[in-house]
Amino acid sequence: MKLLWVTAKRLGSDLASTTQLAVANSLAKRGWDVTFVAPKNDGDVSELVKNSGHLFVGVDRSRKPGLGWFTFGRSLRKSLPKIISVDTYDVALIEWQAVAGSHATINRAGIPWLIVDRSPPVFHSLIGKLQWLEYRRAYKIAKNRGAAGSLPKSEALAHWNATNGRAVEPVTIMEAGVEVKRFTTANFSSTPTIIHHGQLDEEREIERLVSIGEILSAKEFEFIMKVAGRGNRLTALQKAATFHDWLEVVGPVPSDEIPAFLATGHVALFPLPDSEVWRLSSPLKVREWAAAGLPMVLSDITPHRAVGQRDWATLVRHDAPFDEWADAIMNLFESDLSILGATARKDAENEFDWDKTSEALHYKLIELMKK
Image (tube, rainbow, N blue to C red; front, side, top):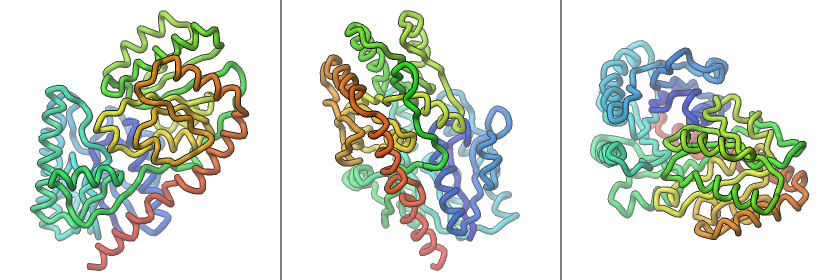
């Protein structure tokens, strides 16, 4: 069984590319041979990709803001016919960023395909407006030009697209998962450490982390806050770290080094705002942190509530004063973190592993292959 997966993520270097690799690993256990078509990295592909066992074909995608969608689509139109001419594929997964450049070739080859939607655009800039145009265009193409269905990341996202007339039926939900075996559990040694990793963007109001840390410091709570990732507020966070000896901003961490980074923490923190785009999201970070055995303090918004009532997850009103966030963190540190962390890890193994969250996709692909 052969699957072609066209993604806009730079595998092994983009933070979110762990999803594609982990899902492919789970599908491979079920007998699928996966070929990725993805943007080239600046250098060679990472060890994580090399060791995955999946095939990888690199195409061009400019890093210049506003040019990525154009160069990616042009490269796909040029490269995909050659890729398909040397091998046969039973089904294809086409992420929405790749639909415009892929659908014609995939349709001519008679390969059934699903439009994959792991996230709508999140930025409100001019670049963001261009991305929204591409997002709507991708769904229009998928709906009118032969997609065999859609693969959104959450029920909320599927419902939102349906209410906006973009539903591509049938819909198969693939919630965020985690490759649990990649993660080692936190050991809770040394100075109490608050940890965060992900996109460090203004749209996530990521500098709230610093504001919460300032309150903790004012309360004379001894701690370190470690922040990892890339984004449009990375420089601002690095500047803030020069004024606070408790703040460490390490910048981007390669995907294969994230588990070791998380294992240095005691408690994870994610004060995500309650905007529409985040209500549509799936709690990937929460599930990764659970796999690392990290208790956590989270904003009380839809995707975080979706993990259910958990002793290891403290929810705080998203617009609560920073004092309330600080108090929640201090209260959590007074708990037995080892017991909470062990429970989080067990829940991740039993409920959040990609082998479980990708099961519906596997059966959908089998169904399409047999048509």
